[in-house]
Structures are given as C-alpha cells and as structure tokens.
Length: 224
Ligand code: SAM
Image (cartoon, rainbow, N blue to C red):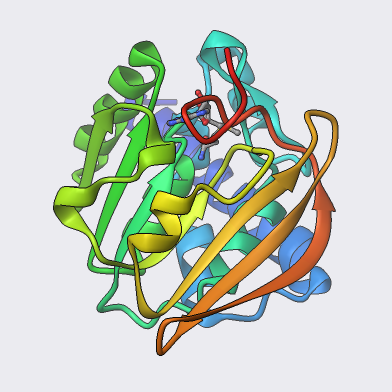
C-alpha cells in the first residue's frame, strides 16, 4: 500500500468512528440539533488527545489529557452545546479550554469563541491544534476564567467546562440579555448542570442532569 493509501485509510477510519459516535452515542440520547450533530461529525476529536489515546478518542467516555485534566465524554460536549441553542451569529465564552475540543465544536457553529484556560501547557497544546485545523475564530487566553473576559463582554452564550460551588457572579454580569449559560455546579465529587437564562435582566436557573467535572479553580471557584 502506498503512503497516500495508508493516510487515506487512517482518515477514513476516523470518519467512520465519528459517524458511529453520532449514531450510537448522540442521537439515541436526544441530541437532535442539526448544527451540533454536524460539528460533532466533522471535528477530528482524535487530534485533541495524546497519540497513545487516539484509538479511544471516539469512545463513550471522557479521557485523560495533560496536567491531570480531562476531555469530556462526546455526549456531554454535544448536550452542553445543544443546550446553548446557538444559531450561528453568537459570540461565546468558554471557561476551561482543556484539550480545546469543546471550543472547536462551538467554533463550527457560532461566530467567535473566546476560551480561557488556567494551565499554560494545555492552552499551548490547544492553540497548536486550532492552528493546525485553521479554526481561526477561536481566541484563547491564560487566566482565571471565573472572572470572565470583561473586554469582550457581553457574550451571547457562556459555557463552563469545570465544576464549581456556585455560578461566578462576573459570568452572570457578562452574559448578554437573552443569553444562555451552561455550567456544572455542586461539590467536588458530583455536580448538576445548570442552565441560566437572562431575559430583560431577570435570571432564571434550570437544574438539569447530574455530571462529574474536574474542579473549577479560581476566585469564584474552589481554591487550589
Ligand atoms: N473543555 C475541555 C475540552 O474540551 O477538553 C474540557 C475541560 S476540562 C474538563 C476542565 C478545564 O478547566 C481544565 O483544563 C482546567 O484546567 C480548566 N479550569 C479549571 N478552573 C479554571 C479557571 N478558573 N479558569 C480557566 N480554566 C479553568
């Protein structure tokens, strides 16, 4: 087999894995938003994990990444994305870049993604993949995301991919009117996904499924 043939085979096999992930893990669990399904079937998740993990990249579970952190299970990424009800014009803030996979999914759906990570090594690795894929509408910075990104506020949607004891007040302030925020809130073992919406300044919070995320560490999160 030629080198080109080999390369083609690798790409094909991941395409099939992605399609299977969408059919077996996402659709049966109620993911039906077309833009979410399209992004999940297109973004190469295997590029966001270490080489040794690539064969498991499309499995129905979270995986470890550098610095003791995790890339979330595909279903959780899709569910949190779908809950934001994006239409395409939005500017979205993500707290917890991690591998960069969730930001990559969002970037295929909305106008611009602002993502904040507190661990430099993770941020650097994620930026490399964004560049490799030419996902140029993702802006990433190193910081404590619990204080948000005031220079770019307000955001049409905010997603936090680490679990904290409360919804950080700066994030509520930086959410635009008619905006949606999804965030895991609870203790350090288990949290619930909370969906916060803002309408004419009024905040509504809906409590959704139980989840397990790594700690949100920062001024309005857990202390280190
Ligand atoms: N969204 C990621 C992905 O797609 O791979 C998964 C993120 S991982 C579950 C949670 C991330 O949140 C970790 O990388 C962690 O370092 C980061 N984190 C925790 N507290 C943070 C904070 N205050 N600001 C920014 N990032 C934070």
